[in-house]
Length: 124
Image (cartoon, rainbow, N blue to C red; front, side, top):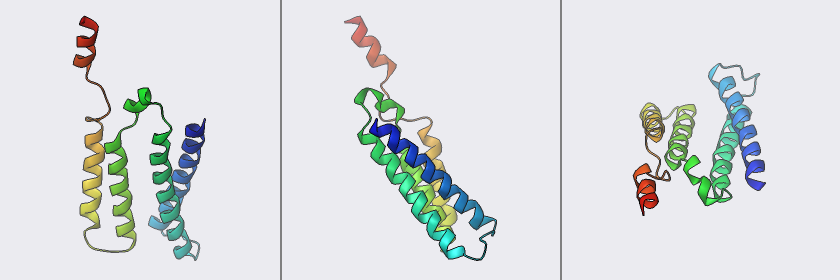
């Protein structure tokens, strides 16, 4: 039950963070870019943190649904966007690294059990 509540709160934080990011990048800040930038940092970081905390409450048999590489890639992407909003150097490289890690996560999942291991157990 707690995992579902954390997921709901995490999704709401992600949505609010994305709204703030869209407002920042389209420069529709309604006269307060500092507040919207802080909202992007807080809601985006809180969404990432809650999605990681949600993993603690997932039963072990559901772990293959959670991909740690995807979470790390999302964290690097968020860091890249923070660096970009602060107009620091190398933001593009951080974003590319984050997107590469996230893309790799679709092919590699450290928690996924190999089908070969399952076949060997059944043969015994």
